[in-house]
Amino acid sequence: MITVAALSGPLPKLGVVAVAALAATALVLRDGRPRAGAMLGALLLAPVLLLAAIWHSPQLNQLHHHPLRGGSVAVVGLLALAGLAFVIYRRFWLLAPLIVFTLPFRIPISAGGTTSNLLVPLYLVVAAGTLAFLVPQLRRSRSAGPRGDGVIGVTGPPGWVERLLALYVVIYALQAIYSPSFEKALQQMVFFYVPFALLFCLLRRLRWTSLLVRRCVLVLVPLALIFCMIGFAEYATKTLLLNPKLIAENNVHTYFAINSVFFDPDIFGRFLALVMVIVTTVLVYARRQRLQLWTIGALAVLWAGLVLTLSRSSLAALLVGLGVLGAMRWRARPILLSAVAVVVIGIAALVISPRTFGLNQGLNGASSGRAGLISGGLRLFSERPVWGYGSAAFEHEYLCRIKHQCGPASTTSQTLSASHTIAVTVAAEQGVIGEIPYLALVIVAAIVLTQGARLDPARVAVAAAFLALVFHTQLYADFLEDPVSWTLLGIGTALAAGATERSRLRPARAGAVATLAAAE
Image (cartoon, rainbow, N blue to C red; front, side, top):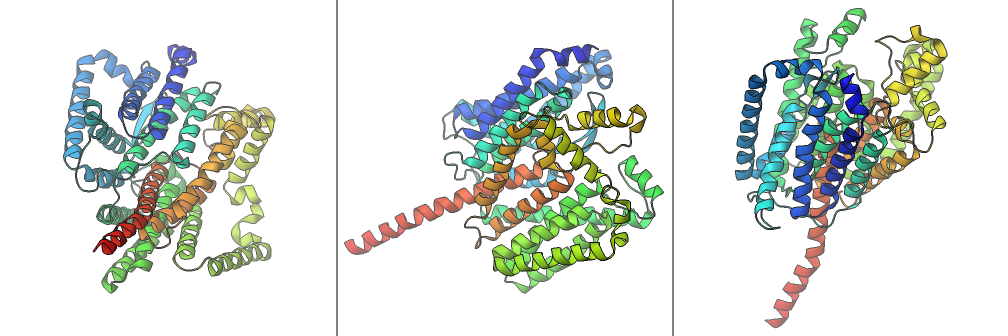
């Protein structure tokens, strides 16, 4: 009751709006002390809000009874954070590979009565990177900061990607105020939106040289291969490392889906699909035969891992990513014609033999209940089309509608109620007010990432992976709740800004050379 009373009061809601405003300010301001102050404020306020929300929860009982032990753990954590921040400050290029390395790792932690799989290692790296970047700026001048290989890149004024990200974060915070699931919205803000906004700011500030890009790829691909090996071991032994719910499902069904170190086969499949898009980009742009052979071998292993996840959404996302890659590498028209042909053949197969694809159960049965979630989300949107039911309210409102229509006994803990289509989720929770910024962000990001990128393999890989991820979010949600989205946007906008700066300086350099030649 104390927790409910605390969360229903004005202070937590004002805190969510304040931390969102700080994160948005960090996104839209250029470099300098105001931006540094906003980043530091968001970094400090987010954990305070979380602790205030879970202070009276059962998982902190040990801290209440043994404050000295809790204080010792906190001191050790702060020392580790300070040590990592110092290392990153001395070798700031390490930040990018560290972020890439920690992206997949989630740790189950109880918060607010529920267990969440949190990116604790990534949070540590982001916090350390933020401190390494901000402390010199706050102490000295606007231009002060860490120096080294690939550190300070082209920033320029904030673009529309940054503005739309900031707008979406602020709208999410404001609509959390009237949400019936405010506690969940608060967790979304402090676990995802705020740390990922800082992540974007750091990646956007880096100079993404070809060397730095290669270092990140050399971290990402072996990591994905190791995850596949773990998945192969799971499949061979018919055991899973994580997720008891998935273990129970595998015991019931005749098939067996692997998840490696991830808690969900679809998230593991998404990760593998995006890595495959990046590796394929290396393959089609590489000129050395040895490198091509290595990439083909890696793709074979990754493909085997992806198939064993049984994630249809990830397979579809892979096709989308490869289609975008092909259109950017060669010509778009043959790719589009091939895509149309595949769609037509698929529709024909469904019409000719619906039983083969499980359509004899109906669309909802064939989609494992996701069709019902979409129709239910659209009904919620039709009831409040302008402002929606509030941030993170989809699951609560959807279950309420089912109970109202079919009775309380119609829902159980196994009832599928979490939306799997991000566009429908945003429409139901935030209405047109949130849907328009979301659609604008996707469209603008696609333009920024693809425009003029055809001859740059790094930009092509980021653009293709991002569009594949956007497609996957329509089948399995988690767009801005996924750090990969912010990572691709941060790297992609930095690469685009660098390309724009080079194209702007090229005529000036040519003019200078012509002037010198005329003078001689």
